[in-house]
Length: 431
Image (cartoon, rainbow, N blue to C red; front, side):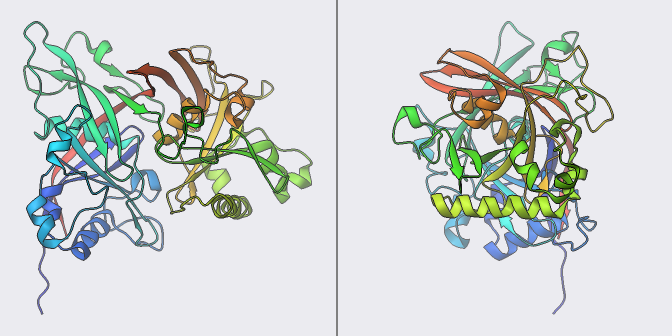
């Protein structure tokens, strides 16, 4: 048997503080499921026991080992009937439903690709790559730009179904009507209005506003929206306080000052350092910490019957801002007076490693937590909204400061976050 090389069209994108390959559904639907899996694994260079993904386009950490499959509703459906459905909710490609009042313009299937193993997790979504999906949907013809008679540049709302979780997000994308593409930074005198800087990414990029509806099918009533255990605060074995909040992908929030005391190195020193001076590389180099946190994750999931995958629910450590210590970032800088003061320090674990910035779904969960003054994030930050139509949460993650806003739209609360996206290359992957 002679091996043959195949070239599969793909786009390589940065979305927010993540990076990944984007495929069209029509290009993967014509392959059998086992072949689809091999395309993703070989493209990104997984599995790699050395954790480098040297033989592919992955970057060796979860935020750089992602794949997205995007399409117009119904795209590739004939091939799916022949070779098997792509992952996601069964109604993702229901064209008539997509055209309805609560429909969607784009189907977004997200896969978290294992680095050291061949695990492909389609069960969640990625809030950072959402901005890349919106960008690609316009520039690759899934969504047609709306015409504007009196503006050279205007924003367009794009409704995106995250097929892994069945949630419809909305992205506000700036369109350059001269080119019919997403606005390219530097192409107008009003660049400051259409671009922004996000912590963890050098320079400025196209400003894309991402709206996450904060409603959960798990909630039996409005007052319990997003509270996975139906309570704002729980205690594990009378030892640790925690909150489990789900605004798209469940997060287990823990108090670092309670967890830190369990680590031998800090017990010896008889003090727990503030989380704001600990960076992901240092936390990752403490195997004992990972073992403890994974044990807590498993016990909470078993106790409360929460489905568990490699990607979720995520463990998120929270800490108070300690005024006696500077807030240090991974680029070597410290928090300056030109930045908004954070109310929380955040370190999230993503697929076994501490995230180098913050997952988009974690930020959405923190925004939602502000509705509940008894939730752990609100108790630690000392802030909570009492039902106002707009409020914000400002957090410090390893690379900088990020802000999420709680806004009411159509009677539904939303988390609103600004991200940027950039197409790095387009072509085909050889597998």
